[in-house]
Length: 433
Image 1 (cartoon, rainbow, N blue to C red):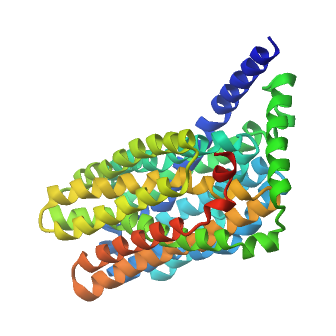
Image 2 (spheres, rainbow, N blue to C red; image 1 turned 90 degrees about the vertical axis):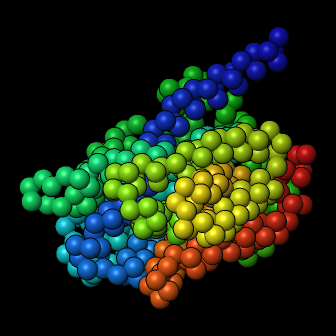
Image 3 (cartoon, one colour; image 1 turned 45 degrees about the horizontal axis):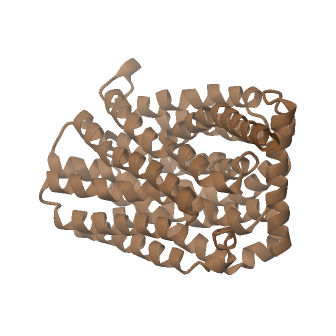
């Protein structure tokens, strides 16, 4: 009878936490990602208006990640040791205003400066959420929670693409449509940043929306998990930064992110060049790979938790990216075949994320885990500069997207190999298996 009661408390608590937190966090990440990548859709008109060549656009799109790099680790430690809701609210409101300012740039200097500041403003949001989820979800539920959260990425592109395409067609108050893309899509971040302060709860002990038995259950589960990891090995922050697995994961994420942003920022321009379709048609077609990514992400996040396996789920997804991009380079003269294999690449680009982000919290706890997630994300996200810039540079030099797409394919392969180099013996899946 006691076991039945405990099981009912477990089910009720997990359901309440998921229902309370996940929809709101997903919505916030959708806003973040739209404001980060809408420059790819604005570029269908922006570069022509401002006289940017592909290399200038690639550099400006990617410089976001230098700003992101600088404040990433401090941001995750603040979430771990101070207040997630207050720090996340600061991040969201700051990036919202800067996203709006992007609508008023006039030259290359403005473009580079605002993109850099936007990266500074948003730094810490994503890894902060990963740390925040570890305050509410047990290890065995974490990949599903991360998968659910990560659905924001394909959703942002699925819905953000056609919305951006529609806004591109307006000309309000004498401002071009690409300027309104930034303005209209930046305003919701400011509004919901304020809402965040009042809606999120920092820790289970503060959750008045859980009853006492529910708060005790989740707090007890998370404390047992923490003590079990400490019994194996307690890492300081400095030791975590020197840990072989952390270094490999940072390198793997760097190569994976090269693909993600090289693909995301340049896909609309590539499709426009291949097809000659209108901006709205391009934005609708560009949503298709992200539909594939959404389905693959949910399935592989579920599969990773069910099998308690992380490395191969991550690596196989990255190999799908490699194959899809390589095949697309062979079909750049056939827009329909190119779109089909772009969908394969899109499926892999997002489905690797849930299992990947379950890896660091499998062998690290508390501040060491928070700082390492920040390190992996900040170093890895420098790939967000390298991907768009190198594709732009190669396109500028060769006059074709072929070499840039091959470069992205090779980066995905490197990421897959590195993930498989992570030592399984140090990961909870081996201990729990």
